[in-house]
Length: 43
Image (cartoon, rainbow, N blue to C red; front, side, top):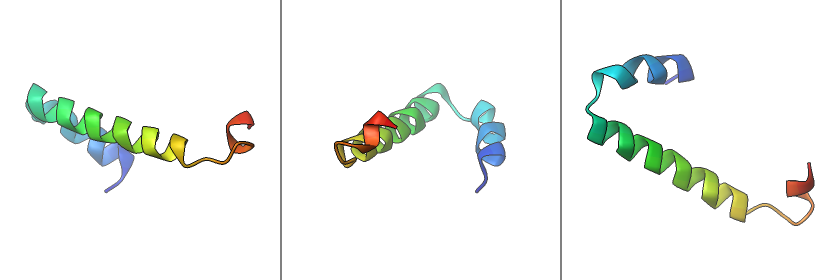
């Protein structure tokens, strides 16, 4: 699924489902941030 398709589908979802998606996406970003080496965040 492409980003454009995901963004187009969001308005048709309930607020609860949108919050679940946002929470999941944020968790993935946080996990990825924690897996960076010490030099990578400087970029």
